[in-house]
Amino acid sequence: MNKMAIFVDVQNIYYTTRHTYGRQFNYRKLWDKLKTKGIIVTANAYAIDRGDNQQQKFQDALKHIGFNVKLKPYIQRSDGSAKGDWDVGITIDIMQTAPQVDTVILLSGDGDFDLLLQKINADYGVKTEVYGVPALTANSLIESASIYHPVKEEFLL
Image (cartoon, rainbow, N blue to C red):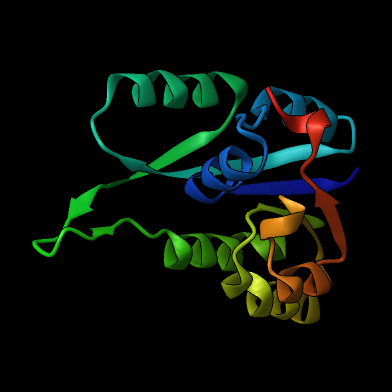
């Protein structure tokens, strides 16, 4: 049986689906599709915590589906910019999990993950799948994945 690990860059998926489609991603639909392809060993969703009530409801919904929600505080810098990047945390978790699974599934369009996918495929023979909005997913990430799944109508609320 195919053992899978899912890693979701929540901010990336939220902003790319909203920008491109004006809609939100349907995590339940994804979960239901993936569980027919094997056993979900781990599923992490990485988000920024702004202490917002609506955001808390969303995080609770993710937990109800089966995701482990990992939060980082939202940091507003004095110059007005914001910080809240999970790239290193996602990378560490994927590196630790890859030897234990057959497939790593990443939801993100961030090209910074291309080398990570190449590395775990080369070192562990892990199949890598990426879900991302076509117009906003880095070509290098698409090319690094064993399989690329464009996020389209099927995965939107």
